[in-house]
Length: 212
Image (cartoon, rainbow, N blue to C red; front, side, top):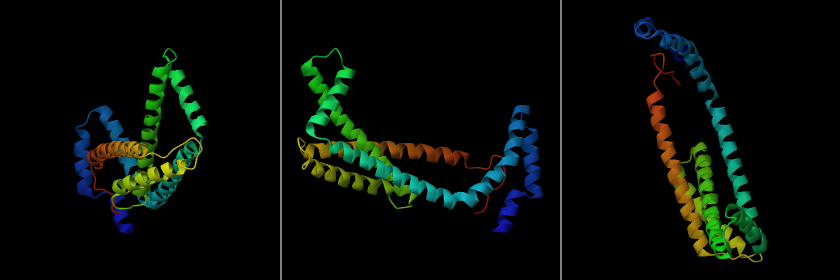
């Protein structure tokens, strides 16, 4: 392992000659940036090789903590009574549409509440995916969707015991739709990031990648 890293940090003569030829063909501005990359890249790769386990562990703790925190936020919102929850959404609707009449405000308030449900579970599903991905669990998106459904069912069951609230199957369906939409965006962004990493994964200085 030490020999592989040493070979990665000090390229062979043949590789050095190829780099010099490519370097001479570049513009002066590109040459200056190439000098920086030539000296920085082996150091960055070596540091990344050594710190990957610690970084994964820190990310795992961070994402699971954020997931638990967001679940607590959803649970606290569900613990509000019907009057408290309706008053909050009514104030937000009145602030967004100050010119609307009572009937329009009531319809907009209902729409606002359903959109809030979808947004809550879209964020929750993404956090579940990140947490499971950082834990190296297979099929993180599928399990995140299952966990989001279970969280939505538990949330609606909890509302059965809150005064003025009622657990509804329609709200579970809305939560599931929000989770599915969030996971769709998560998968889309992840594919874009993977493609960019695939294009930029080659050594900028033209050498071989660091052996791990």
